[in-house]
Structure formats: C-alpha cells, structure tokens
Image (tube, rainbow, N blue to C red; front, side, top):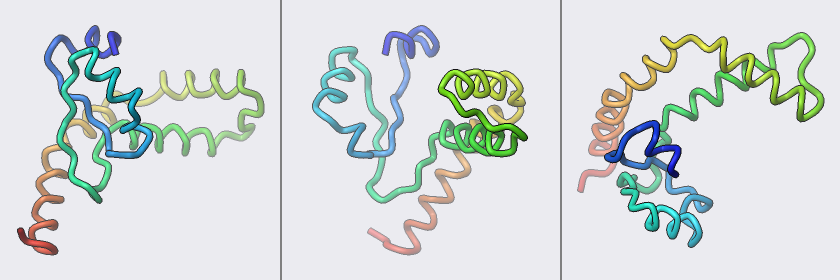
Length: 115
C-alpha cells in the first residue's frame, strides 16, 4: 500500500469491486492499518476499474502473439513488452471515461430499480 501512497500522494480512494477476495479480514486490516479509505461500491454493479480493461488489453495482445509464452519467465517478459508498448492514449481514455460510465450506470440503475 505504500506504493499507492508514493504514486498517488496522501489523499486517494482505493477502488475494488466488492469481490470476496477484496473483503477478507487481512485485506480489511491492511487498509485500516494504512489509513486508506475505500470507495463506496454498490452491490451487483459492473466493475469500472480501468485496470480491468488494461488486463483485457494485455490478454488479447498475448493471445495474438505468433508464439505465445510457455514458461513463467516468458510470460513475465511478454507482459513487460506488451505493457511497454501499450499506448498511453488507451490509459488516458479509460481514466477520462470513468465519469461517463458511472453516470450511465447510475441512470440505468434508476430506470431498472428506482429507490
């Protein structure tokens, strides 16, 4: 978590999708010990975390390789290569689209199940 602080500064919200692995006692204790605030995330909501789209991009790039990685070392090297080749525009677009995607989800949620 100190890595997040170094990259993001002292004030940031931690985003997860309420998956059980993110809600373990160990995860809760770590976030609390580092005084990290978690973003509210409604149940049964789509995962808006931009990193999911990055993982998808990397997976598709690996699958498209003529010789896919076979060993862990090859996988690590291939992922590093694909990460380095990933266009910054992709990351920028994903981050800038967050507001629009959240607003759309909230609007659809209101239509389907108004509170």
